Length: 294
Image 1 (cartoon, rainbow, N blue to C red):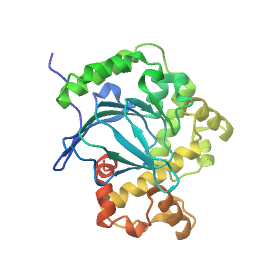
Image 2 (tube, rainbow, N blue to C red):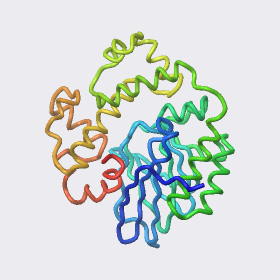
Image 3 (cartoon, one colour):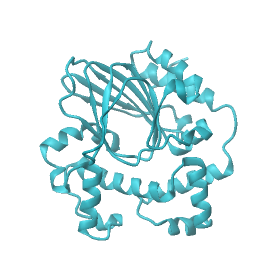
């Protein structure tokens, strides 16, 4: 049988770093948003960190070689965490700077909230804004998948191995109706680019605000308002900074005024909007531009 190839593929190549973004086979649409691979052949630590903007996804990161540092953006008191082993990263509500510490090879799977809840159920709880070491997460098949991936080199083979493992894991159980409903609400939030209220979401889907909030807490360990805020800023960032121009239409994204927008932008990126299109920040934006630029 011919090996399936990624349905979409993007590459970022610098002198020492190769970054691939790829999708899995269509049967996993709605479960996985995309996967990524990064290799760094340089011995020295990365001079400029990459900024990671929250995207509303959960993630499994396989560290097959090397290590990296992670620090929350906009908080001078935040400690730098060194990540040395593969882990599961729950929903992130704050941006981070990430810096490789030398030669490195990592693979990641970006799960949709529906896909993460469908596969891991109760493990959603306590993962929000946390990273859980793979052996402690309680999904043995992820550890087995890591061993398999360590033997592979090309993106097509990696995509095939990830797809096969996920499809096997999905064979048991069925998604409850409340999870399917919550996924429909998330689809609405994405289609509106986060520019709606929870009350509008309630009216559109014929459920009370309290019911929607309960479902979101039950399946995603987060409120619909948190997903709205993350989606709103992600789209504003994607449609401005990723395309290298100032975000002038911030009122269209639900901000009350310019001061509200500037405060939120600085909190999420560490810089004012006018600084975000300058060369030193754009160096931090390279991988975000690939991930958010689709």
